[in-house]
Length: 158
Length: 124
Image (cartoon, rainbow over all chains, first blue to last red; front, side, top):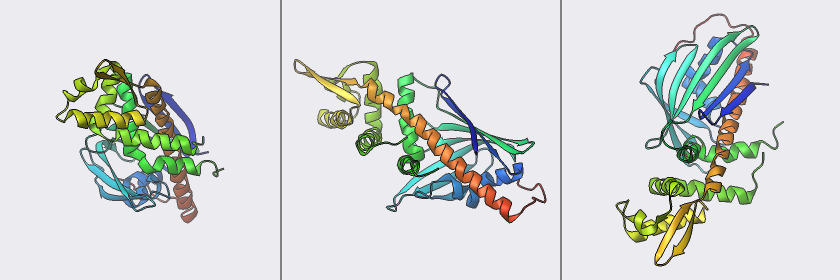
């Protein structure tokens, strides 16, 4: 079991996902730091990601698009806020004109391998209703095609 | 967690409706207070007819409801539909879980290829 815990706190608009891997910290970091590796897990098989820009430094940008089954491309980007290779990464995830989602990644050495904690936080402006609507926007941003693809994959998986 | 076709079509309408900045703004406003279409049309640099069209798209997606009061059409945000938007957070979880599954698979491939990782490396 890769994902060991998911906590969602609507109060702080935060989702915290914890995963454990039988791998080294460096190995885990490479999957973020190497664009070709990133492409292999970021989008689902039906919507593979192509990374066109990858500058993992504070202020740097990662730009990508996912290609749907009909060939339609949906763009996405990260704005890198902080990097402490190979242990931590912080970036905004979004599309132009849309309030971005904050993503914080922490990678820790564990006796049996490596633990990765991913904390995603929605913007803090406005009323809860507005944030929920933004939740939809983020869905658009992160996943127009991916949502259905992921859901489609669920019933047959496992 | 399976979403049936009806629900998916409904979600498509919601996604489409919320893909436009003006329509998002109308939803946010009408969740907080009832607005007439003419009051809304004064908020945006567009015609009454254009705003009316936006409201119609939102109505189709059940994001707002419209009622008539004399000569005015009053628009209210539909909390239930917006609440359904919260489900998207659950979907966000599914997306990240699926990502982590692929992440783990990739790492497992690495492990097969190189049984022991020789050095640290790995800086960006």
